[in-house]
Length: 156
Image (cartoon, rainbow, N blue to C red; front, side):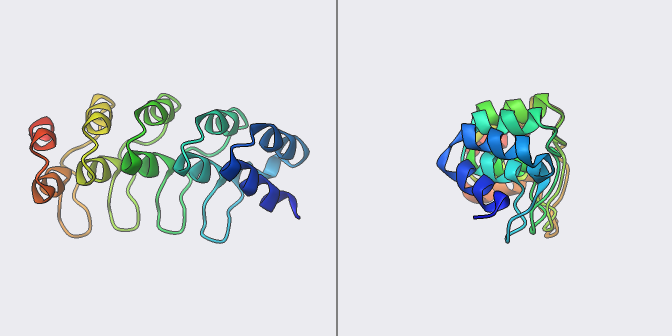
């Protein structure tokens, strides 16, 4: 198996020791992309592998790199609502207002999926609630559509 595949398999299984071994031997793989355009950081974030995310950041992973859909690690974490990981990425310089290919931000994803804690955290880090996606909708529009009154109140 090639080192890139080994790296992604180690991330998915949560094997931080193997991630470190691969990065020590092949540091350029820290920002490699898989067939879906996922970087190791996006992949680790998606699977809630916080220790591996920290290892990748320590190895200078590009925090705002995107997958094939334009999603950053922060956008993926906001969708899933992992506040600890969200906070870590924000503290390490993730762009709180990055947009994916559909113009959707982390705040809009958090609002759409009812992640009130994530919405608050993003707002505390200066997320712009006025940003509209490619359909002309803001985070509050998405929260209203889904019936998330507590999130609408946070965004109002």
